Image (spheres, rainbow, N blue to C red):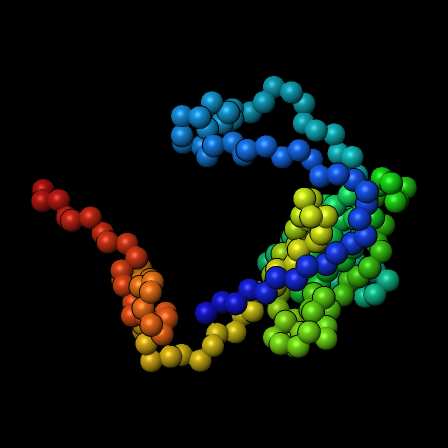
Length: 197
């Protein structure tokens, strides 16, 4: 079982209003979505790089520590009105974004620190273990930062859990509504009948 904990970090309101968000475009594959699906490279020039700076990785030194990096580097980056937050594996850092509060982009404000620093004092697994692969997002409608940190430790096996599947075996899923979830294993995908040649 993989548990995910969500932590919300609120920054001071910037005074900016969220953009007017309309209905999202239909998924590609539908008639409506096919009208806006890009199927070839555009003719216009690539967007200009506005800012470039070194983030977390080998050689990074911030006011609160270094980041040596590991492979694979699971990088997550989010941009808010005044800050850029980056998470790589088990470290995170906060950088400036040029605008109302800062005159330049990419100056380190905080970090590199362990991602579980966000959960200090809350107790539980996220406080105790610095798991990697956290993800950061900026919620522009609520003007807040969201951090999701997976917990990579399985709970003890229960007698009603299915055995580890064998290679080539069917994918399994629990039946919803069964008391004592997850319940008995059931086929997730039923293969089509074989066609006689």
